[in-house]
Amino acid sequence: MAKTEPRLIRRVRHRRVRKKIAGTALRPRLCVFRSLNHFYAQITDDCVSQTLVSAGTLNAEVRGDTKQMMKTEKAEHVGSLLARRALDKGIHKVVFDRAGYKYHGRVKAFAEAAKKAGLLF
Image (cartoon, rainbow, N blue to C red; front, side, top):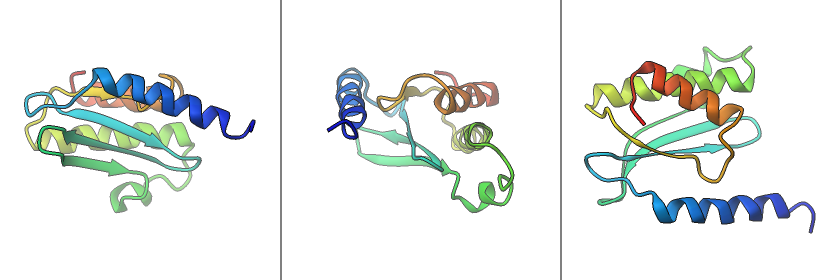
């Protein structure tokens, strides 16, 4: 049971966060997912259940650039790429959904890079 406890705790935390956060057309939701090796993020409008912008470490643009980078640096790269794509589509303000992860490490690096690139949380 020890292996599943952190996953269950994150799911509980994620449900608690999602009760309070919802993306709208004016301020869509920026949600993140991190696996052991990769980092993904997308901006969604929850009113129409549509993904507006997405980026991840497996994208062709990111994959070639991040061969020798550490995971935190990859997350920063994804954050700046996602912010650029969002600004190109006219999205300036978002609600940050950390998906139950602590605001620490890769999640924090991603968020700071997205803020630096011009997204407003």
